[in-house]
Image 1 (cartoon, each protein chain N blue to C red):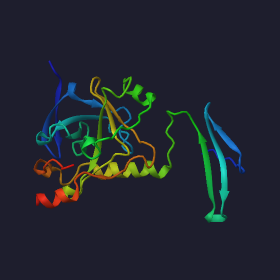
Image 2: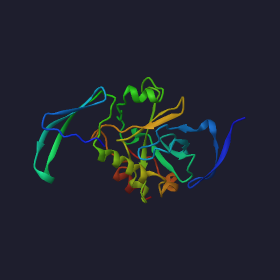
Image 3: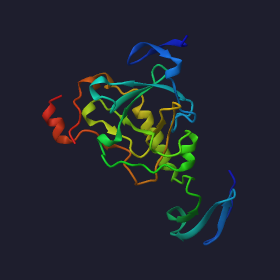
Image 4: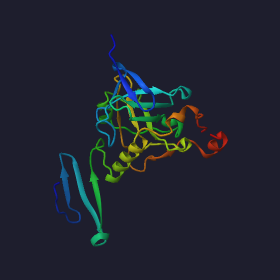
Length: 154
Length: 79
């Protein structure tokens, strides 16, 4: 019988969290070492390219994640074997890479953190945030190009 | 914090395989700038501290986005 519990969240109201769906970030996030357990939730219209990372310990802690290829199609961060080993990965082939988005009041101005992406092993449901070398990628990469913002009239 | 005094071209060694060397000193007093050369294995991340602090701050700003509920209405971005 699957174990589940209720979590009151800011964005999604009361959620039922299935234990088996929980992702573990053993080292938390940069500056948030205690945030170690999350679930991933889809945004249906975006088909996997945009997801929510909801903390299962803090209902008010959630992040928007984006597939970095949406901003930078050729994005291929270099991750050391030692870091991959922490996730039980031999290489990047089965790793999922997502970037944390900063969403301001005007969501069309949202940016993706390509300097410190999340590396996720979907098979053992672990992840971590790795800081790439300075100047390699932007900390705030705009997600929407200006012309798209004008066209939408959002 | 361990505090050591080094002159130009002197080094310190951390653990088995990390070396930090003073490769240049220029300027004086509060304008003084020290250039450090770091030798470390590939898997050891070396960053200016401000970068780590900036990432932490960006994470903090990104947590619980205010306009999150609007995301459903956003179209997919045009490349």
